[in-house]
Length: 384
Ligand SMILES: *Cc1c(COP(=O)(O)O)cnc(C)c1O
Image 1 (cartoon, protein in one colour):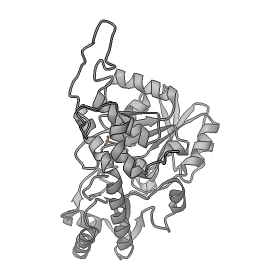
Image 2 (tube, helix red, strand yellow):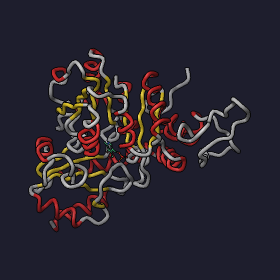
Image 3 (cartoon, protein in one colour):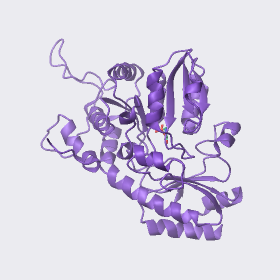
Image 4 (cartoon, helix red, strand yellow):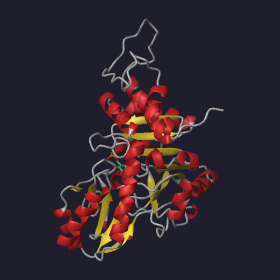
């Protein structure tokens, strides 16, 4: 039997093996910057008719992501939110979905303002600890989670939830943006659909927006293909190429970001001004054991609480190399203030319930030299 390659190797070499191209021995997949395709004859097609339906560069990226995420199909879309918006087209007025309370703010905004208007209802609970089965209704169709969550880093047992979903014939949808397929494969744990903001770790350079839907079910893949053709938010050829390039270095970036995250988490724990460090790689984190079971790593995201708002704002105002910006998963370390940035549109009572306060800061740890990150944080803390 042929031995299976490691995921780091697969991120690099799938590109040439999954695709069908062999143009001049090019190592990098070509960018097919075309909107349409000539037909060889009447009733004939090269397999490509129009780029809203499919484009070779996008298709190449989709094959790579489907394979790495252990699905049978992946759709590359123009952003993570475009992907989640298309996903919501699986549902009809009257359908009910159980969602985790601590989701990416944009997902909450979409569900509350657009999906609800379209007649879909939601029950928002803490899936890592609440009784999910008790919230299932006659019209419940799906469970939608992130793990670890954004920004509170709650960890949900995917396999346990998948069992509940399977018993009641619900779709289990997992947004895998925080760990990426390098560290976690929800489909293998029983999920039906995986969502990614490819803008984050997959692209990895804070320069391209992208989103993915991945599934291991034929029936869902067929629906998705109809929807992307019909609604048209497929990823552009050049952006597809940028994400393909990003994935080549996913492994070393994730490992390095994780190493730096451990350094910073342990340093933060020692700071008097820090009241709590939320990083699932710390053995005292409540989700640590589940993470060890269901993931291959802990990622580069961490959240911490400081003693008061003044201190939080002072840190945000004083960072230099670390940039005060939204987004995550890129090579540069970013610090975010969820209260007024990513989760500003989330109603106050939900933010409070989730623990997102004026003292909450989130770090997307990049791949700088760890010592430089610690030096900057030391300076900033000393001045605050
Ligand atoms: C950023 C993000 C999204 C949305 O993706 P965009 O590419 O910004 O549209 C969805 N889920 C999570 C967890 C995210 O971090």
